[in-house]
Structures are given as C-alpha cells and as structure tokens.
Image 1 (cartoon, rainbow, N blue to C red):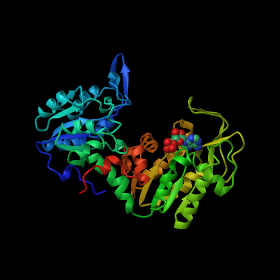
Image 2 (cartoon, protein in one colour):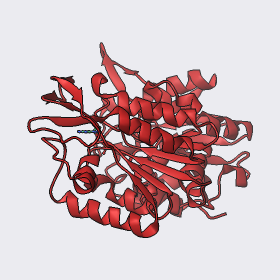
Image 3 (tube, rainbow, N blue to C red):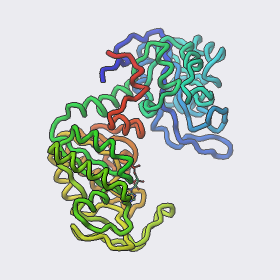
Image 4 (spheres, helix red, strand yellow):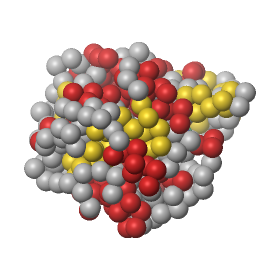
Length: 404
Ligand code: AMP
C-alpha cells in the first residue's frame, strides 16, 4: 500500500504526534497498576528509536481499555511512561491530559529527541466518535502525525483517523511493516500461496475466505468452522460439533467459488472428539480420534483436527512459497485439544523456503506457545485490523495517511 512513512519525511526538530497501541494488560497489585505484558510497548521501539535518532520531538498518544469517555485512574497510561523510560533508557515525560494548554505546553517544551506520553485518549468522550473538535485539539499539539497503531487502524476515531485531516500524516515503521506483509505481499504472493484459516464460526470468517479465494492456490480450513464443510463434502454426521444450518449455504458457495477458480480446498478428514466439554473450566471428558471419514457420534463433539488431517495439511504447507495463517485448528486454549494447532504451527515454521505470515489473534498466541515465533517471517500485531485487511476492507487509519 503506497503510503508515506516516517522514512519519507524529515522529522528533525518537528513535534510529531505518534499514535501507538499501548493498550497493555494492567493488574492492580495492592493499589498499584502493574503492566503484566509489555509486548505492545516493545513493538513501537523501532519507530521511537528512529524518530529519536532523527531528532524529532515525540508526543505519544494511545488508548487503554474502554473508559468510555470517563476519566478512570485504573485505566491511566501513567505506568506506561515509566516502563517506556526503562526500555528506551531515556526520560519520558507524562501529561495528565491528552489535549489543552498543559499538554500543549509540555509538547512545546520538548527538546529534539525528547519523548512525552499523553494520558489515555479515550478519557475524551469525543475520541471514539471521531469528533472533529477533538481531532483539531490533537492536531494543535504537533506539526506531523505518525500512525503506528496498526491494531487500531480499523477504527475511525479522532486519534487514529480524524487528526490526520489536520496534519501531514505518515505511518510509523510497525504500521509500514504490517501493511507490507498483511497487504502488499499478499497481492502478488510467491506461489504456491497456501492460506490456512481456522476459528469457531463460518459466519465470522466467510468474508476472509471469499477474499482469499481470489488470491490463494490452496485454502485449508480447520477449527470449529470446518465441521460445516465436512458435512457438505464428506456427508458425515457431526454429533454436537460446532455447526449451524444457516452456515451450510455460505460454506457451499465458498466451495463452489473454489471449484470455479481452481483453488484447492482442503478440509479435515479426522477429528479429536470428546463426550463432554467445559470451556470455562478448561476441561474435556473422554476423548478419542475418529478414523478418517468416520462419523462423529451423537453426544460427541470435535475439538481438534486429527493426525490424518495434520499429515494432509503439513504436506501442502511444505510445498508452499507463501503461507498465511489465521485461526486455530481446535480449542487450543485447552491443552489436550491443542495438538493440531501446535502441529500446524510447527509445520509452518518448518518451511524455511516460504514467506510465512501469521495473521493476528489466536494464531499468534499459538505460534508463541509452540515456541516457533522466531522461525516465521512475520507475526501481525493486529486482531480485528488484520481480519478487516484480509477481507479487503479499507482501514480508516490507513486511508487517512498521505500517499507516496
Ligand atoms: P476465532 O476467534 O473465530 O478465530 O475463533 C477462535 C476460537 O475458536 C478459539 O477460542 C477456539 O477455541 C475456537 N475453536 C476452534 N476450534 C473449535 C471447535 N472445534 N469447537 C469449538 N470451538 C473451536
């Protein structure tokens, strides 16, 4: 996507309002809010270090949680300023408001290479409404707007989109990388291009399936949504596996489209089944693998793909030159149902000749848990944003940036 990035401009000596995703998990430990996972802060460091080296004045803004336009001390970004300061080994100033005279004065006082973090933008009721008055107040802080919050780019909010109308607007390095892998690389992929899609519901993923049917050589379907396809193609009974009658025509249309376009469409041939399943307690009852093509009996449900499916999928993944994966193969949150998902993570990592792209959400967790995160080409930081991009939608936060 030909959007300008911070590498296309000269930010030296300029006040840059940088929208990042510092929506980190916080835990109240005896009255002190503690960051339990700083990954999102770490992801922004390349952009921040680049801007610091260029002598820019950096004004950081982000949302945290869902304060719904109210000031909530438990959802303050203040702890992030300290964490960022440690990571950068530099002082990071904190402004208790994200707009207005105090924030403006702190922004103007920044030296070249200085860093200021503003308070949670969602303390403003106008943020999620993309209120133009608020967008102008954000713009008043700076001379350049940088969007590095890919995970929020599917939202048209003041700090993610509206502000870009009032300042020169470019992407940060994380945003640029996301667009390269999650968009550009997939327009003209090296072939064979194998797409693996999992997840619970056919209805949630059908737009992604349809969009990728236009680009992929092979589509592999796993997870809860595979059962509808298995009923249609293999004529098996599903027991109490995830299935809705209204998903059948949607799945049938996707199969027809694959047939017309000559896209290979692979679905599981076997399953791990259980006779009882309690997601909240992370427990399953008796389990066994079905034989390839075997019906799932009444009272049993599929919770993972079986070994024959893994072999089938692995062989396809091994010959790919581009692999995109989104969505687990089973209920991978429960350890005894996670093998199929982890096997696929390993199969993807094993193909070192391919560009391997992990497209957000649960597959990212799976790749990390499987211990192969450093063996894949790219791991997206976006959940909803990744899916919308894969669906072919225009992301408001990206559309608002200057073209190259
Ligand atoms: P999604 O958010 O659509 O990518 O779906 C991810 C969820 O699908 C995870 O929480 C999985 O536990 C769930 N899932 C995957 N396979 C199954 C299955 N066979 N039955 C029920 N849920 C599943």
